[in-house]
Image (tube, rainbow, N blue to C red; front, side):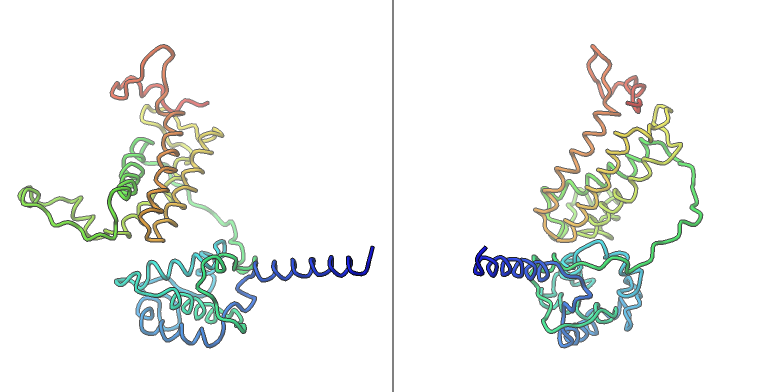
Length: 314
Protein backbone atom coordinates (compact mmCIF):
# COMPACT_ATOMS: atom_id res chain seq x y z
CA UNK A 1 0.00 0.00 0.00
CA UNK A 2 1.45 3.37 -1.01
CA UNK A 3 2.12 6.16 1.45
CA UNK A 4 -0.47 8.35 -0.32
CA UNK A 5 -3.19 5.72 0.18
CA UNK A 6 -2.40 5.42 3.89
CA UNK A 7 -2.55 9.19 4.33
CA UNK A 8 -5.84 9.40 2.44
CA UNK A 9 -7.38 6.61 4.54
CA UNK A 10 -6.26 8.29 7.77
CA UNK A 11 -7.68 11.60 6.59
CA UNK A 12 -11.06 10.00 5.86
CA UNK A 13 -11.16 8.45 9.34
CA UNK A 14 -10.22 11.79 10.96
CA UNK A 15 -12.85 13.76 9.01
CA UNK A 16 -15.51 11.15 9.77
CA UNK A 17 -14.68 11.24 13.48
CA UNK A 18 -14.68 15.03 13.53
CA UNK A 19 -18.03 15.21 11.75
CA UNK A 20 -19.55 12.75 14.20
CA UNK A 21 -18.17 14.65 17.17
CA UNK A 22 -19.56 17.90 15.86
CA UNK A 23 -22.88 16.32 14.95
CA UNK A 24 -23.65 14.47 18.17
CA UNK A 25 -23.04 16.44 21.35
CA UNK A 26 -24.51 16.68 24.83
CA UNK A 27 -25.21 19.70 27.02
CA UNK A 28 -21.96 18.93 28.87
CA UNK A 29 -19.91 19.73 25.78
CA UNK A 30 -20.00 23.54 26.07
CA UNK A 31 -22.78 24.19 23.58
CA UNK A 32 -23.32 27.88 24.53
CA UNK A 33 -21.24 30.89 25.60
CA UNK A 34 -21.26 32.93 28.79
CA UNK A 35 -22.22 36.02 26.79
CA UNK A 36 -25.20 34.18 25.33
CA UNK A 37 -26.31 33.03 28.79
CA UNK A 38 -26.11 36.67 29.97
CA UNK A 39 -28.42 37.69 27.14
CA UNK A 40 -30.77 34.91 28.11
CA UNK A 41 -30.73 36.02 31.74
CA UNK A 42 -31.78 39.53 30.73
CA UNK A 43 -34.70 38.12 28.74
CA UNK A 44 -35.60 35.82 31.62
CA UNK A 45 -35.78 38.70 34.09
CA UNK A 46 -38.21 40.58 31.85
CA UNK A 47 -40.35 37.74 30.50
CA UNK A 48 -40.10 34.65 32.69
CA UNK A 49 -39.22 35.40 36.31
CA UNK A 50 -42.80 35.94 37.49
CA UNK A 51 -43.73 32.35 36.60
CA UNK A 52 -40.46 30.46 37.07
CA UNK A 53 -38.88 32.36 39.96
CA UNK A 54 -35.71 34.41 40.32
CA UNK A 55 -33.71 31.24 40.99
CA UNK A 56 -35.59 29.19 38.37
CA UNK A 57 -37.11 27.28 41.28
CA UNK A 58 -40.63 27.43 39.86
CA UNK A 59 -43.59 29.51 41.04
CA UNK A 60 -46.69 29.47 38.86
CA UNK A 61 -44.65 27.63 36.24
CA UNK A 62 -42.44 24.55 36.74
CA UNK A 63 -38.83 24.70 37.93
CA UNK A 64 -36.13 25.02 35.26
CA UNK A 65 -33.29 23.48 37.26
CA UNK A 66 -32.49 20.33 39.24
CA UNK A 67 -33.74 16.78 38.82
CA UNK A 68 -37.40 17.65 38.33
CA UNK A 69 -36.47 19.68 35.23
CA UNK A 70 -33.80 17.38 33.83
CA UNK A 71 -35.90 14.24 34.29
CA UNK A 72 -38.60 15.79 32.09
CA UNK A 73 -36.23 16.72 29.25
CA UNK A 74 -33.42 14.16 29.41
CA UNK A 75 -34.93 11.88 26.76
CA UNK A 76 -35.55 14.73 24.31
CA UNK A 77 -33.12 16.68 22.11
CA UNK A 78 -32.39 20.28 22.92
CA UNK A 79 -34.48 21.34 19.91
CA UNK A 80 -37.60 20.28 21.82
CA UNK A 81 -36.79 22.57 24.75
CA UNK A 82 -36.03 25.47 22.41
CA UNK A 83 -39.24 24.81 20.50
CA UNK A 84 -41.25 24.70 23.72
CA UNK A 85 -39.92 28.12 24.69
CA UNK A 86 -40.33 29.63 21.23
CA UNK A 87 -43.86 28.36 20.58
CA UNK A 88 -45.53 28.39 23.99
CA UNK A 89 -43.77 31.01 26.12
CA UNK A 90 -44.20 33.39 27.82
CA UNK A 91 -47.66 32.79 29.22
CA UNK A 92 -50.09 35.32 27.85
CA UNK A 93 -47.81 36.30 24.97
CA UNK A 94 -46.92 33.03 23.29
CA UNK A 95 -45.02 33.17 20.05
CA UNK A 96 -43.49 36.58 20.71
CA UNK A 97 -39.96 35.31 21.37
CA UNK A 98 -37.65 35.07 18.38
CA UNK A 99 -35.70 31.87 17.67
CA UNK A 100 -32.52 33.62 18.82
CA UNK A 101 -34.10 34.78 22.08
CA UNK A 102 -35.33 31.23 22.68
CA UNK A 103 -31.87 29.68 22.42
CA UNK A 104 -30.43 32.49 24.53
CA UNK A 105 -32.90 31.46 27.21
CA UNK A 106 -31.85 27.82 26.79
CA UNK A 107 -28.24 28.95 27.32
CA UNK A 108 -29.21 30.69 30.56
CA UNK A 109 -31.10 27.59 31.75
CA UNK A 110 -28.09 25.38 30.99
CA UNK A 111 -25.72 27.74 32.82
CA UNK A 112 -28.08 27.87 35.81
CA UNK A 113 -28.11 24.08 35.82
CA UNK A 114 -24.33 23.92 36.06
CA UNK A 115 -23.60 22.84 32.50
CA UNK A 116 -20.34 24.33 31.18
CA UNK A 117 -20.09 27.14 28.66
CA UNK A 118 -18.07 26.87 25.47
CA UNK A 119 -16.61 29.19 22.84
CA UNK A 120 -19.49 29.15 20.34
CA UNK A 121 -23.05 30.40 20.75
CA UNK A 122 -25.86 27.90 20.73
CA UNK A 123 -27.39 28.15 17.28
CA UNK A 124 -31.10 28.58 16.60
CA UNK A 125 -30.89 26.09 13.72
CA UNK A 126 -33.34 23.30 14.59
CA UNK A 127 -31.43 20.55 12.79
CA UNK A 128 -28.31 21.36 14.81
CA UNK A 129 -30.22 21.61 18.08
CA UNK A 130 -31.77 18.22 17.39
CA UNK A 131 -28.29 16.66 17.57
CA UNK A 132 -27.63 17.99 21.08
CA UNK A 133 -28.87 15.68 23.82
CA UNK A 134 -28.61 15.17 27.57
CA UNK A 135 -25.97 12.74 28.86
CA UNK A 136 -27.14 9.56 30.53
CA UNK A 137 -27.15 9.26 34.30
CA UNK A 138 -27.96 12.88 35.14
CA UNK A 139 -30.90 11.84 37.30
CA UNK A 140 -30.81 8.82 39.59
CA UNK A 141 -33.47 6.23 38.91
CA UNK A 142 -36.37 6.42 41.33
CA UNK A 143 -36.62 3.62 43.86
CA UNK A 144 -39.58 1.30 43.26
CA UNK A 145 -41.14 1.99 46.64
CA UNK A 146 -44.71 1.01 47.33
CA UNK A 147 -47.25 1.87 44.64
CA UNK A 148 -50.85 2.52 45.56
CA UNK A 149 -53.33 0.73 43.35
CA UNK A 150 -56.97 1.74 43.20
CA UNK A 151 -59.69 -0.45 41.69
CA UNK A 152 -61.35 0.99 38.58
CA UNK A 153 -64.58 2.85 39.26
CA UNK A 154 -65.94 2.89 35.70
CA UNK A 155 -65.94 0.44 32.83
CA UNK A 156 -64.20 0.72 29.46
CA UNK A 157 -67.20 2.36 27.78
CA UNK A 158 -67.37 5.04 30.47
CA UNK A 159 -63.63 5.63 30.22
CA UNK A 160 -63.94 6.00 26.44
CA UNK A 161 -66.91 8.37 26.64
CA UNK A 162 -65.48 10.41 29.48
CA UNK A 163 -61.88 10.80 28.29
CA UNK A 164 -60.99 9.37 24.90
CA UNK A 165 -64.04 10.32 22.82
CA UNK A 166 -64.31 14.02 23.80
CA UNK A 167 -60.58 14.65 23.77
CA UNK A 168 -60.01 12.89 20.45
CA UNK A 169 -62.74 15.00 18.90
CA UNK A 170 -61.15 18.18 20.22
CA UNK A 171 -57.96 17.16 18.43
CA UNK A 172 -59.82 16.21 15.24
CA UNK A 173 -61.34 19.70 15.03
CA UNK A 174 -57.86 21.07 14.30
CA UNK A 175 -58.29 19.68 10.78
CA UNK A 176 -60.80 22.44 10.04
CA UNK A 177 -60.24 25.01 12.78
CA UNK A 178 -57.02 26.79 13.70
CA UNK A 179 -56.80 26.87 17.52
CA UNK A 180 -54.94 30.18 17.28
CA UNK A 181 -57.88 31.84 15.53
CA UNK A 182 -60.04 34.17 17.67
CA UNK A 183 -63.07 32.44 19.14
CA UNK A 184 -66.25 33.37 17.24
CA UNK A 185 -68.79 35.47 19.08
CA UNK A 186 -71.99 33.63 20.01
CA UNK A 187 -74.88 34.09 17.64
CA UNK A 188 -78.19 35.56 18.87
CA UNK A 189 -79.64 32.03 18.75
CA UNK A 190 -76.87 30.69 20.97
CA UNK A 191 -77.29 33.55 23.40
CA UNK A 192 -81.04 32.87 23.55
CA UNK A 193 -80.34 29.28 24.57
CA UNK A 194 -78.71 30.48 27.78
CA UNK A 195 -75.74 29.04 29.64
CA UNK A 196 -73.69 26.28 27.98
CA UNK A 197 -71.20 24.49 30.20
CA UNK A 198 -69.34 23.25 27.09
CA UNK A 199 -68.85 26.75 25.70
CA UNK A 200 -67.99 28.04 29.15
CA UNK A 201 -65.28 25.38 29.65
CA UNK A 202 -63.82 25.90 26.19
CA UNK A 203 -63.67 29.63 26.84
CA UNK A 204 -61.52 29.17 29.96
CA UNK A 205 -58.96 26.75 28.52
CA UNK A 206 -59.25 27.37 24.82
CA UNK A 207 -56.97 27.73 21.84
CA UNK A 208 -53.84 25.63 21.69
CA UNK A 209 -53.94 24.97 25.42
CA UNK A 210 -57.12 22.97 24.87
CA UNK A 211 -55.36 20.79 22.27
CA UNK A 212 -52.35 20.34 24.56
CA UNK A 213 -54.63 19.23 27.38
CA UNK A 214 -56.57 16.85 25.14
CA UNK A 215 -53.41 15.07 23.99
CA UNK A 216 -52.10 14.85 27.57
CA UNK A 217 -55.42 13.45 28.78
CA UNK A 218 -55.30 10.66 26.20
CA UNK A 219 -51.63 9.85 26.84
CA UNK A 220 -51.93 9.74 30.62
CA UNK A 221 -55.33 8.00 30.72
CA UNK A 222 -54.35 5.26 28.27
CA UNK A 223 -52.55 3.14 30.94
CA UNK A 224 -55.94 2.82 32.67
CA UNK A 225 -56.88 0.49 29.82
CA UNK A 226 -54.40 -1.97 31.37
CA UNK A 227 -55.70 -1.63 34.93
CA UNK A 228 -56.31 -5.06 36.46
CA UNK A 229 -60.01 -5.61 37.08
CA UNK A 230 -61.36 -3.08 34.60
CA UNK A 231 -64.43 -4.42 32.82
CA UNK A 232 -66.16 -3.76 29.56
CA UNK A 233 -69.71 -2.45 29.33
CA UNK A 234 -71.05 -6.00 29.03
CA UNK A 235 -69.45 -6.98 32.35
CA UNK A 236 -66.66 -9.04 30.82
CA UNK A 237 -63.18 -8.42 32.19
CA UNK A 238 -61.12 -6.45 29.71
CA UNK A 239 -58.38 -8.68 28.22
CA UNK A 240 -55.59 -6.57 29.69
CA UNK A 241 -53.02 -9.35 29.25
CA UNK A 242 -53.72 -9.92 25.56
CA UNK A 243 -50.65 -9.00 23.46
CA UNK A 244 -52.88 -7.12 21.00
CA UNK A 245 -54.63 -5.19 23.77
CA UNK A 246 -51.27 -4.19 25.22
CA UNK A 247 -49.95 -3.27 21.76
CA UNK A 248 -52.97 -1.07 20.97
CA UNK A 249 -52.66 0.67 24.34
CA UNK A 250 -48.97 1.37 23.86
CA UNK A 251 -49.65 2.68 20.36
CA UNK A 252 -52.26 5.07 21.76
CA UNK A 253 -49.78 6.40 24.33
CA UNK A 254 -47.11 6.89 21.67
CA UNK A 255 -49.47 8.64 19.25
CA UNK A 256 -50.92 10.89 21.96
CA UNK A 257 -47.39 11.95 22.90
CA UNK A 258 -46.63 12.59 19.24
CA UNK A 259 -49.81 14.67 18.99
CA UNK A 260 -48.83 16.68 22.05
CA UNK A 261 -45.43 17.40 20.51
CA UNK A 262 -47.15 18.51 17.30
CA UNK A 263 -49.46 20.75 19.32
CA UNK A 264 -46.47 22.31 21.05
CA UNK A 265 -45.22 23.40 17.63
CA UNK A 266 -48.43 25.46 17.31
CA UNK A 267 -48.77 24.20 13.74
CA UNK A 268 -52.27 23.38 12.53
CA UNK A 269 -50.77 21.30 9.73
CA UNK A 270 -48.62 19.22 12.09
CA UNK A 271 -51.57 18.37 14.34
CA UNK A 272 -53.81 17.66 11.36
CA UNK A 273 -51.23 15.16 10.12
CA UNK A 274 -51.16 13.50 13.55
CA UNK A 275 -54.94 13.06 13.59
CA UNK A 276 -54.64 10.39 10.92
CA UNK A 277 -52.49 8.25 13.22
CA UNK A 278 -54.87 8.89 16.10
CA UNK A 279 -57.88 7.79 14.04
CA UNK A 280 -56.03 4.67 12.86
CA UNK A 281 -55.10 3.72 16.42
CA UNK A 282 -58.71 4.02 17.58
CA UNK A 283 -59.99 2.03 14.59
CA UNK A 284 -57.48 -0.80 15.04
CA UNK A 285 -58.57 -1.45 18.62
CA UNK A 286 -62.27 -1.04 17.82
CA UNK A 287 -62.10 -3.55 14.98
CA UNK A 288 -60.40 -6.10 17.19
CA UNK A 289 -62.34 -5.73 20.43
CA UNK A 290 -65.46 -3.61 19.94
CA UNK A 291 -66.84 -4.11 16.45
CA UNK A 292 -66.79 -7.89 16.70
CA UNK A 293 -68.84 -9.49 13.97
CA UNK A 294 -70.80 -12.67 14.44
CA UNK A 295 -70.12 -14.94 11.46
CA UNK A 296 -72.85 -14.57 8.85
CA UNK A 297 -74.48 -11.57 10.55
CA UNK A 298 -74.30 -7.88 9.68
CA UNK A 299 -72.88 -5.52 12.29
CA UNK A 300 -75.42 -3.02 13.56
CA UNK A 301 -73.71 -0.64 16.04
CA UNK A 302 -77.12 0.43 17.36
CA UNK A 303 -78.10 -3.13 18.29
CA UNK A 304 -77.48 -3.59 22.05
CA UNK A 305 -76.98 -7.33 21.52
CA UNK A 306 -73.68 -6.59 19.78
CA UNK A 307 -72.20 -5.53 23.11
CA UNK A 308 -72.15 -9.18 24.17
CA UNK A 309 -69.30 -9.90 21.78
CA UNK A 310 -67.05 -7.06 22.90
CA UNK A 311 -63.75 -7.48 24.77
CA UNK A 312 -63.32 -11.10 23.74
CA UNK A 313 -59.78 -12.36 24.36
CA UNK A 314 -58.00 -13.01 21.08
